[in-house]
Structure formats: structure tokens, C-alpha cells
Length: 78
Image (cartoon, rainbow, N blue to C red; front, side, top):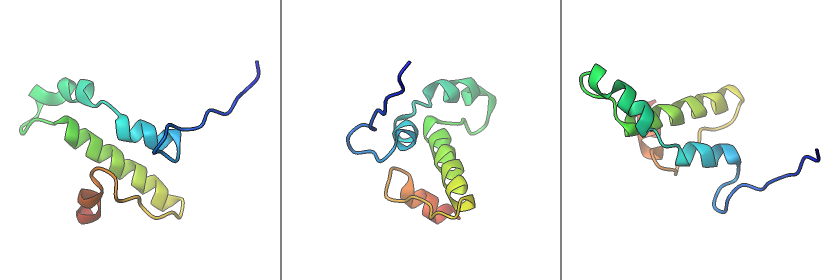
């Protein structure tokens, strides 16, 4: 099997950023929606994903990414 390089979709610098930016958190939110007060939403989960991603960047000595969806919230949450 030959391994081929597949470039990320237009507008994304990597497949990881594409996966994070387009992640559908609705299934995960439905799992916890009724078990928490206030309910956990898809936006809550996507925000946590961005926080985790940026914490990994910081541990790697890279600056957190801002300017994407939730970027302002991320900057204001630290």
C-alpha cells in the first residue's frame, strides 16, 4: 500500500484544525444534556475542545490560536 499525502481542505492549514473547526458536538451534548443543570450544549463542548487544543499548543511552546470561532472567548477565559 502506497501512502499518499492528502492536503487539508481549502481554508485550513491542517487536518487537525479542520477536524476541530468542523466537529459536530451534538451527539456528545445530547448524552449530557439532561444530566446537568444548566444543560451542556454543543457550544460548551466545542469551547472545551478549543481550550484543550490550545493547552497542547502551549505545552509544545506554541502560541494559542485565536481568530477562529470561540477565539475571543478563549482569550478572555485565561
